[in-house]
Structure formats: structure tokens, C-alpha cells
Length: 317
Image (cartoon, rainbow, N blue to C red; front, side, top):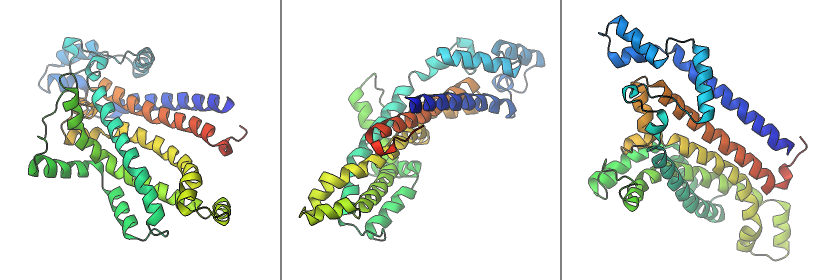
């Protein structure tokens, strides 16, 4: 319990630091939201009036405290772009979060389904020193960014093969099956380099376990290689792999924003790009905090789960 308590305190302090840096970073960036909304030809009186309406004439620390208090209550503030319609940041993002989360979960499912079997096969039949064709190809796939794979998929499957119409997004409210079908290609673009990373890590773990004493003992008792692999080695190799899988979940949910732009998905990525261009700082700050909470929160869960999965990691704290 002491370990969990310390971890939770660390998470809270980290999120406070992220919120502070996120808020004040936009205070030093050139540009004024009021001027951006009204244009450079607007009269100084109009700009000053709009700054007052948006609360930008107040001291920065006072605005930060109010914003942080609203954040803790679930109130993300008013979007600068749609202030005339009194649209909150929460209203703006509530339609976009399900798209990003579903895309991330679909990509993670693809990673699990493909990486573990391929990693096992690579460890069982591939070269142990990592110099074979399998490892070279896997390394090359790891090096390709997801958005580059996405662009190739749009050209190959969308334009050449015409398996889907690029940009023809189907809302999950209108047709959920069509929505999932459209997400398959962007999810695959996200999953492929991450799956290659898991394959490399799992193969390395299995290869390392195969040289340990308990494996030699099992061989001495007449156990076959497949029995040793699936009954003994695999469960030990999967424990450290679970840690990297947790990190990958956070990376997927936080890092799918660029791929969303490639496939014209109305998720958090489009909202972020639009908000940055419009100097809509409340929306940008909300998305940054969303990413921070996901990454830090999932890492906390992985740390806690790993201590329960692997008793060897339970050290006195």
C-alpha cells in the first residue's frame, strides 16, 4: 500500500507540473487570441473588449488557478473559437473522444493478435543473434512512422484498390459497423510499427529465458522444446512484455492524432490542429491534459499490476 500511495502522490504532482507548464507555455507564445479572432484590422477598443469577455485581461496566475479548479470539477472552459455560441470545450470534444479512443483500442487489439504469435515464431525459428532476415525486416517496420504507413495505405487501398473511399468517414452514431470498418485501415497503420516493437521485445525475452537454468533442467528431464516454450518460458517472458504493452496503450491513445489527419477522422487530432491554428488555448490545453492523464495514468496502472503479477518486483519501500 505504501508503494501505491507514493505512486499516486507522484502522479498528482506530475499532473500539476504538466498543467502549470501547459497553461503558461501559451502565455509566452507570440499571438493574441482576441486579435486572431477579430483580425489585425480590428479597432483596439474591440480587441480590448473581447479580451475582457474571454478573461484575458486578468493576471495569468489568477486565470491558472481558476482553470485548474475548473479542470478538477470537469469544467474545461469556453472555446475561444465558439465563444459567441457559448460552446464549452467539453461540448466540442465529446463527439471526438469516442473516435480517438475506439481507434486506439482497435489498434491495440491488432497489436495483441499479431505481435505475440509472430514474436513466439520468431523466437522459435529465427536466428538467436538478431541478424536474420526476420529481425532485419522487423527492425525496418519499427522505423517507419505510423503516418507514413497511413499515407501508403490511403494510396494503395483507397486509391489503387478502392477498398475504401479516403475521407468518406462514417459516424458511429449513424452506422457503427461502417464506423468500425473505416477505422480498420488507420488502426492498422498505427498498430504495425508498435506490433513490430512488441515482436522484437518478446523475441528477445524468450531467447534470453531459453538459456536460464530452469530451462536446462526441464530439458534434462526430457521435456520437448515446444512444451518448455509454452508451459514455462512464455509466461515468464510475457511479464516484462506486459509493461511495454501498457506504455504502448498510452502511446496509441495519445499518438494517433497525426494518423487521424491522414484519414480525415473527426477525432482529437483534427480538434488539436484546428485549435492551434485558431489560438484556441482552452481546447489545446484540454487535449494536452487528456494525453498527460492517459500516459501517466496507464503507466501507474502498469506499475501496480506488474508488482502483483511478478512477486520478484516487490521490494521494500
